[in-house]
Image 1: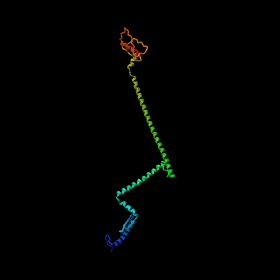
Image 2: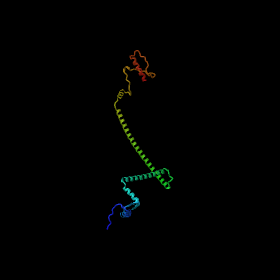
Image 3: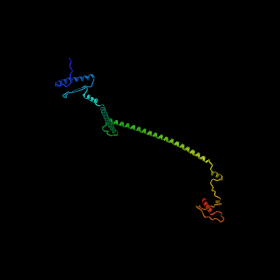
Image 4: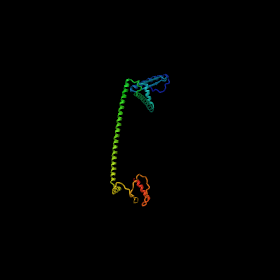
Length: 252
């Protein structure tokens, strides 16, 4: 006959309870071992007796299994935040180490803190400095060539502008000369008068009342006029004689 169904409740008899615990514990440990071997599963079993005694089984490691259990059982958002925080912490640590390394390298390039360096490190530093010097000279030469080319281009532009200005000035001068020649060909009233009179200059025409027959030159230049004696038989008034005397002195 088969065994009857056991009622699941706390066993009141202390001895029976202890015997049942030992049997069931061994069976549970055996089943956990079989599950880990047959199914290639990661199994961790922890049992505490009523007296507080610990019984455990783990296919790999109980601590690793518990840590994995904690990662999977926590809130995914908290897990992501924790992972992100840890990632940032690692990144900060890497950047800090890199910054310190760059500072140390800079001091070495400036010739500082060379005491701890070995001969090989000093040789590598010397090669780096030589390479940097060559690159700096090449860059300097390139910049100088670019500046020279720029100056030559500006010189050519200024030369072209100068040529254009010369052409414009020559055109304007030729235009002005053509206009001047056209104005010389126009008839002038004073030119016709000269040709009619036969003289090369202007002549002062006095009214008949102011014409004098003969003008006697004075011995010295007189700025003004002299009092001349007017004869009794003269028909010209005294004011006209004074004007003639002033004109006579001015012509000298």
